[in-house]
Structure formats: C-alpha cells, structure tokens
Image (cartoon, rainbow, N blue to C red; front, side, top):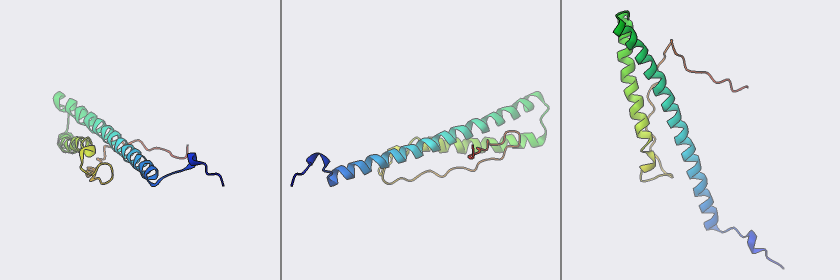
Amino acid sequence: MNIDWSQLITRDMKEASAAVARLNEVQAQLTSRSEAAATQILRIQDRVETLGYGIDAGVATPQDEAEQQTLAQVLKAWKTYKFMLGNVSRQAGWPLSLDWPEQPMTPEIAAMPERVVDETI
C-alpha cells in the first residue's frame, strides 16, 4: 500500500482554511455595508445641499426647510453608522464574533429616488 502524503489534509489545515474563508466573508460584508453607507451619505448630502441652495436664494418653501432639517439629522446618523463600520474590525471578536452597528433608516427622497437594480439583466 502506497500513501501519497502530499494529499494529506490535517485538522489544523482545515481550521486554517475555514478561518481564511470566514475572514474573507466578513470582509466582503463589511465592504458591502460600507459602500452602501457611502452611497446613502452622498445621496442625502446632495439633497441637503440642493435644498440649501433654495433656502439661500430665498425661494424654498417651509416644507423644503423642514425637509432639509430632517435630512440633516438622518445624514448625521448615516455618518455615525459609516464611522462605526470603520471600527468593526477592531472588535475583540473580529472576525468570528461581531456586533454590527444598526443601519439607520433610508430616507425617501422623491427628487432623488434610490436606484433599483434589475437583477434579471
């Protein structure tokens, strides 16, 4: 009987492979969440600035001013969320046990709706 030792896979090798797979999975999740947060921040920031143009020009309605104030608070929540995502990898349990920050609400912005991705393409 001949044994091909090059085909040997030890428990340590399996555990190391599983650890790498988990790290890759968590890093992909973190990247995805961070990119989504950055997109939301840009979207909200653009609307806040656009409303500010109308306020500065004296043509904004009271509803525009109220929308800007509300969105400014939502923007702050998204920036906080993005910052907290940046610290996820510093958690003691990284990457095995994570406490993901809670994602803020996504505001409805009629003038700038979120892009809908057609997954059938």
